[in-house]
Image (tube, rainbow, N blue to C red; front, side, top):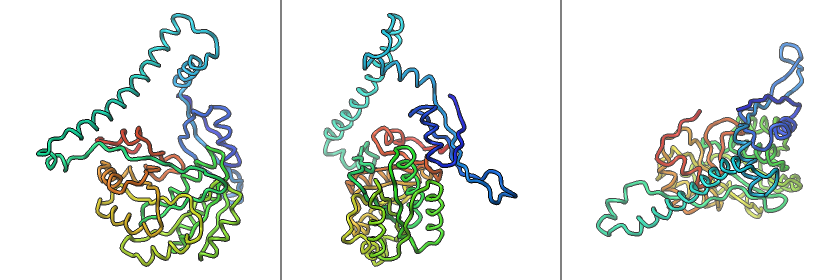
Length: 336
């Protein structure tokens, strides 16, 4: 594993250096902004530091596999080919085993005798939900995050913004209508400044409409909203007034994995007022299992988009997928 430190005037420049010098397989270990020079910490020049690493062994193996698949590079010697082909065969076997595992579970569920259905019901089922992360469908794609208080919407917005702006090279704009908490607005302002992204703070539906117009040249507009208790339907209706007549491509309901199942379901029913069509589960680092999450997704049948695993921006977020779910089923998650 080779670890390098990159420093630049902006986050974009630092990440661009990572990609240029370490390649697309590089892993961002940590990032921070700081001031350089000045006097007693004042009047210093803002700098951005990224700590990145790359596994040279994995990179060499990946290159060999690509050369065989595409027919590029020098022809492999007989001894070299014998070393590479088992790697391809191993990958093929892993994919086959995953497919057979899913087929086996489906067959077992369909063959449960009628008398054993009640006994099997309390057990956690091996369930794969559908998956649908943010998809850019045109300029701009407008995506809002909604949910109860304290689930981490603002931090999740920052993680999404950083990943799309820094790692995918997309133009991103931020809008917040979470004006009930001054701390949340200041937090998002700080992230916007670090990432060099435009932010609009709005107080009325008319201002929200104007903000969307001002950011209409962006690839993605991310909308942060105030936390609302599922028991306060009036406040949720007030939130829906901001969206009425405004085209939102996606609305993600953010829930915490350490929430009781009945509370999750109550929140889903309440936030139907804003027509959410995706779910993000946060705080995976604060729970020992994901049984409630899987039960919720099976009951509500809404695609899962992302999982968040801590407070670090931008790294503590994962795009939901079968492999990610499989990683957390039946094992305690330990946050490094």
